[in-house]
Length: 167
Image (cartoon, rainbow, N blue to C red; front, side, top):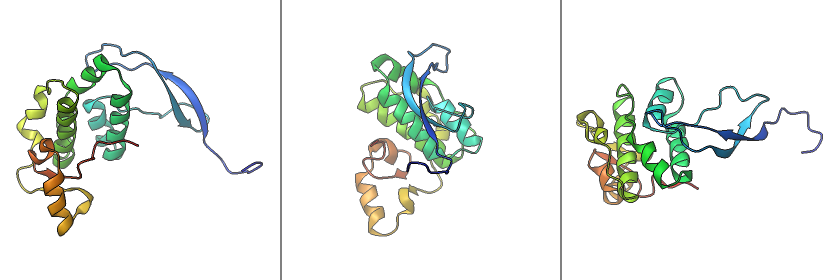
């Protein structure tokens, strides 16, 4: 709206230089970021460790995972593999840790990379009870049990088949 006195976030193009968990630089990427007058507080979850740390700091897990998926899908072949190898902070809650391991395992298999060893750590599995995405009940649970990717089922997580798809 023209002439509106509302405080509207502005779009800014910024060139980000990110590194892998091992300090190897990834090529700069130009992305469009939302900001309110400064670039303070802008985060981009670029690997499992940053997803876990930001989640532990109070940021929503699914937003962090979405940032990671966006970074992964934008990256080139070599950068993609580098984004998968860094292990998370294992103090992440059980469901989130298993979900993150499942996501990295699925991405590895889908894109032809060897899954990193950390995804097979026993802490990355739900042992007590299954988790159903969307707080599914009844027939939706049955559908998720059928449609879940194997990497998720393997960890007792039942979600939709397009769980890692981005729009």
